[in-house]
Image (cartoon, rainbow, N blue to C red; front, side):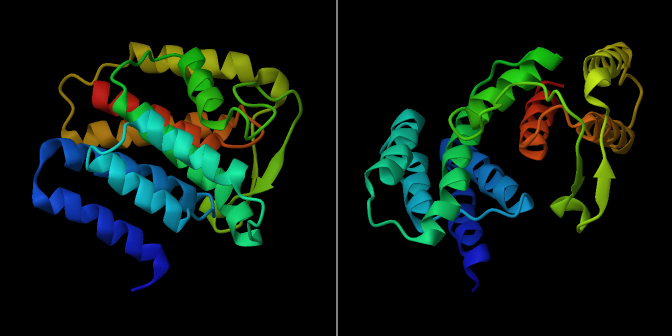
Length: 214
């Protein structure tokens, strides 16, 4: 079994065991780690061990985050591969914490707050709208170059998309139709790319919490 699949197999075991609280925590960790892979990042074996302890109730999510932070702060002999896993590990634990919180407000401000909480100390621009134009070759689109919203139209575009979504009614829609609409909205706001980095992960967390609320 490849290392990329090992973490998923081990975490899914908690779901198969059928204990609701452990299953919920396991699902959150799987989403968190999976989102790192979507952005081309890998988590460490240490994170997986920490996640298991959290799922099993041995430590809280706050303690899990402190362990991850300390792991990278205290190691002076870290390898290059560990430097590469630092961002993924830290952000994974933060995503897990956010997914475990039941509070949510459907607004651009909430999206920015999620971005700040995910990337504070990781990116200098955490939670801040970019002030310049960007184009990228996106990993999630197999390297295709994407042109995003102009920086000076971000606020107006966000306000329009969120206002339109708030006014939309899901009443009478089938499950498939509802999912299609949710996916389109997520795609539309992702295309705005209001942040310099971390848009995919912040958007995914925002939409997951919004979907649960719906």
